[in-house]
Amino acid sequence: ESALNGEVVSGHNAETIAIAKNLIGMANNLNQLTKLSHQRGFHETHVYVVDLLRRLKEILGEYRQASYKPKLSSMGRKEDTT
Image (tube, rainbow, N blue to C red; front, side, top):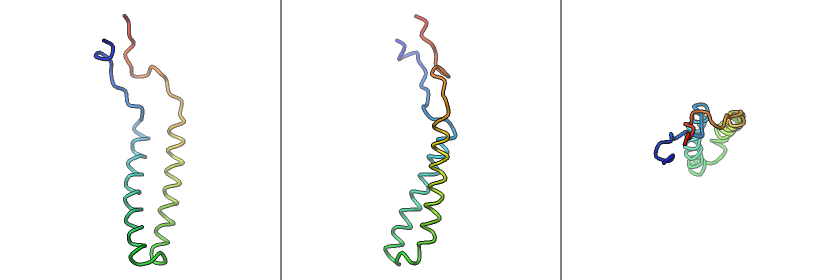
């Protein structure tokens, strides 16, 4: 019964969702840069690849900080009173 009357609570907050969306976009960029590197040679794309890797490292650091914030276990959940 509690499964039918309970609420679904996301395990992620808005900050971590935004970071994940950012990572998805950067993954697409990395795939495009990889393809271009194979077509034209790494010497033409290395500056972009290095910049993308730097940005990825920053975002992963932000994600680590956001995911280590303390969470209250009962936050946003209905308590079973039966």
